[in-house]
Length: 290
Ligand SMILES: Nc1ncnc2c1ncn2[C@@H]1O[C@H](COP(=O)(O)OP(=O)(O)OP(=O)(O)O)[C@@H](O)[C@H]1O
Ligand SMILES: [Mg+2]
Image (cartoon, rainbow, N blue to C red; front, side):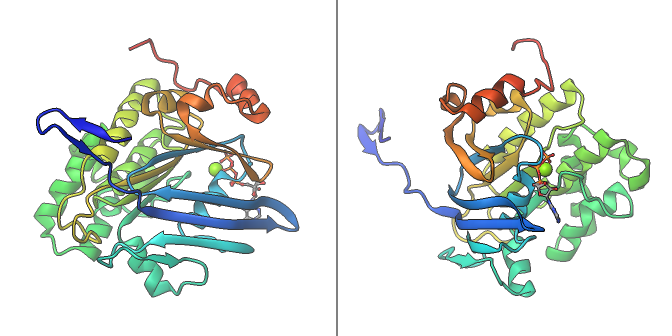
């Protein structure tokens, strides 16, 4: 919607929507059992999108297609190539590894099961910065410390801990710190607050929101020109996270998209699967009212 700039008295038009991810006719089956049955979605740059649906409905499989980790049976997944000044859309299906790596330079993924590799917390968070930037180790350490503090972990306490010494909640927070440390243009979170206590969850809600709204640093790896806007795609069962962020909600059920619209409309959507889901959706992180 156009807005009136009171100082200048001008009507400002919002920037035209630029596509970040365009999914067309995506189908996927495992052992002849269809999981995704023809998904069509466009996610625009700077959007914040939540994918919801009951356990096993195909949310992670859908995300894995958007990140090029899975290949579809049919369909197309085109994504913006931030390494090009025109950010042209490029087809992920069948893309060679080198090109996929180049596309992924501006993405970060928080995996459902964290996917930390063997090594210390510091090694997990620093690896990407060591491999893809020219930052001195001193600067990398500073970035990692900032990212760990942002997820409310004490850097002095956790940086030298091996992966095996982390609790589930700590590992989840390290995975989030590792994702935000490179200042990515697109962040995918698969259940970022599952297993966290209510207080830490509240911090993560704010972190997701603030990270989304904080412009990318000029000169971030993979960023060209004015590409400072960030796009956030998350899978969540956390009702409080949805309430606080009010994202665009995409609901999967039976392998199709049964709802796609603002959270405010999702709450009252006249869609049986959405009604059932909302009635049974656990308030995982019951918090006192703000
Ligand atoms: N690599 C695979 N091989 C065979 N079946 C798979 C594979 N990956 C996923 N599936 C199946 O696809 C379906 C959807 O799985 P998915 O992990 O996407 O569910 P989900 O919606 O993310 O659930 P949850 O909320 O529990 O994480 C499940 O039935 C799962 O068993
Ligand atoms: Mg999942």
